[in-house]
Length: 145
Image 1 (cartoon, rainbow, N blue to C red):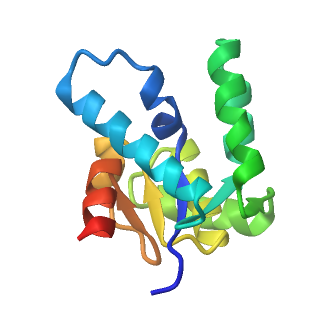
Image 2: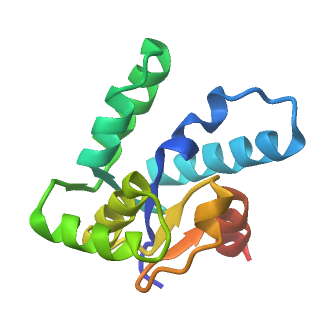
């Protein structure tokens, strides 16, 4: 198998900053940190997008914003805005996905990502042709099998 290409959404990047009192949050945090270590080691390829720039840029917490923004420098691909992204996003919205999430998914698809990693249950329950939407824990389980 070629190097898996991943797109992490904003909730995944924010997971380590969430309260770690719930076991699920702690496990998702550990899985996300493991994924990031694999990205650093080039076991996985990663895409970043203008949507991540936009959403992270709106974060009022400067520490979180700065820590997350560093990941842009490790991306193997950057997805800029385009009419195609908007069209694909609109199509994904037709599946019942919120606008921002649909645009993130459109960016991931445009970037040729194999996996869209999220901690959002509403998204992991959706099916979008061309990409696997997956929780960080399930992604690690799949990759490590």
